[in-house]
Image 1 (cartoon, rainbow over the protein chains, first blue to last red):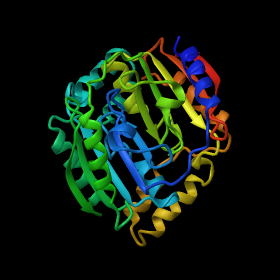
Image 2 (image 1 turned 90 degrees about the horizontal axis):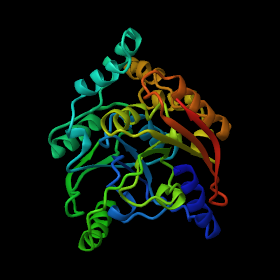
Image 3 (image 1 turned 180 degrees about the vertical axis):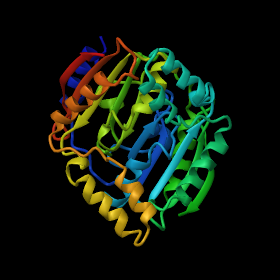
Image 4 (image 1 turned 135 degrees about the vertical axis):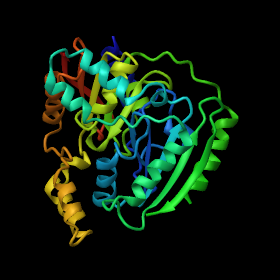
Length: 169
Length: 169
């Protein structure tokens, strides 16, 4: 039972709890929900140091609302986009996923219409995907002018990150 | 320089890298991007064990696309929604944030229109916010039938989680 596991693990955590020092480095990291991604260890971040957004693929477009919150409400000026090799988002297409959801809801025209409006931001080339997101942020008028956006690829085979972009909005 | 810090920290990580055993526990955790949240330590999760989605507030609605990917493409049946006390999303309103973005883009009717279409999912009561998300998922026809959804509140003052909901879709 996962719920029971959470409760037992958290009892140990809370027993040794100390409030983290909030010394945020002024960065919001946008990365993938993939279980192999561990942004703290892979980027050398401690609790309290960064806002971390995760979604399927690490899409900047999907993360936009959170980026706007971090920027306008919490004054965050650096956005780091981190995608990774062997990403699940390269293994199916938006069309395939739309069809799976439609098949699970036969005769539901409302579901079909909703699903056809969702872009899951699939991609084939991981570096191109990061570049697409950098371009998306630079061209988006909602993003705070003067923001720094860096782009990264994490290699799940060897644990290495490579920087693939660095732009100012 | 944050980019340089990432690179140096990652060199150490990669030097000791071993590929994580992928023994996902079949759970997708949806939680907040807040720097004080560390889902691995707070919930006892190791790398490879769970898909983790994070956004401003831990909103299930904002996370829907990622939840659908985890469910239909990767067969994830348990969704854990974890919000926390003292959340940034209780400290401003959607209307306030819309106005901040509009003020930064004077005369841009296109920006104003886009921003007025964004719901940032602010809330005032954290437990009510989790319950709202559980209701949202249970009532959403896109979510896989038979999914288990648990709701949690993390207390940033003492590190403790409390379970506040457990429903089947």
